[in-house]
Length: 390
Image (tube, rainbow, N blue to C red; front, side, top):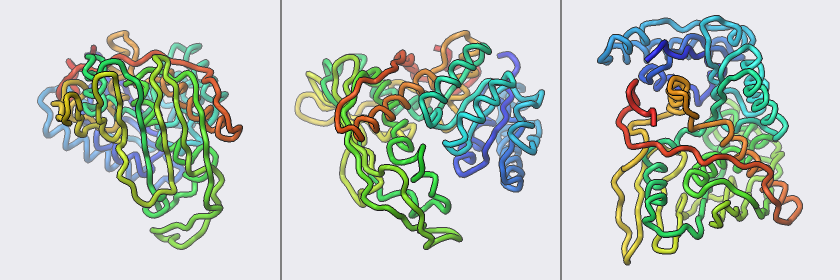
């Protein structure tokens, strides 16, 4: 491999720990800097990253891995300072959804590649601005989720592509919870514009559905907001009430380009359920797909009268948060498209916003964007410098 992609992390909140634990062992990446509005949190993240790097260095089997893990992590005073650093090639954007576009555009303006948490942005206009800026600058933009690159979704995709269920006819996708305020100490952003169950969790499910069935051409939707206020259930602010500004129960039907119809339910208003995460039904059988918020999970095929487990046959084994960024780095070197792409993320965002528009208008609406179905991930072990180029 060539020199690793030097990564600057913006936003050291709750999700950052998952990335900090993974990045030191991924090929083609080296974390060089971190920043957060709360400097103490940024300093803690830098120490966590350095400790994880030392662990990776101790376990390294190659000089390249050891060299990658031996460097320190700088703490930048601001996002503006971080994107301007000469030792940053790519920005890992882990800010709250409302700041995704601002940070991404600043990074692109500074000549940095971007990989961010979902959603790509809060509006179609912001997404188009990000895509346009990246194209003009010749830079890459990637976006979570990368969970769909793991063996769970990829094994299911291979089963569909191999014709094990015949022609896909329909799918179901269900995400139900009573809400995030029970466990998150600062949950308000989940209930403000840019939040809600669809924009929060929908990217996992819709990205998986595009991998499985292709892009969406039309949606029909309905939505509700049963409670005007919610109460924080944990942390120092427990008991505080806050306003709900978005719909918290969203349901709809998605028409995929290939003709399959998906029934979708995303809710922060369900206390308990026994619904499957994703199922795909075809002309010759059915497929049970694991939770797309995870990288692994059981894949089961029904064909001939019984459910049977499928052994993992595709995807990055041992994957975790950050594999999408590593895939981007490998794609840069190989000159191929990366899989967790802004193109896919923009289409997923458009599907979600169009579904919310259809719910408000009580109708069905065409989806204005499309995307290429990402290339499947061949079955490989732990991502390494020689793996995942397919």
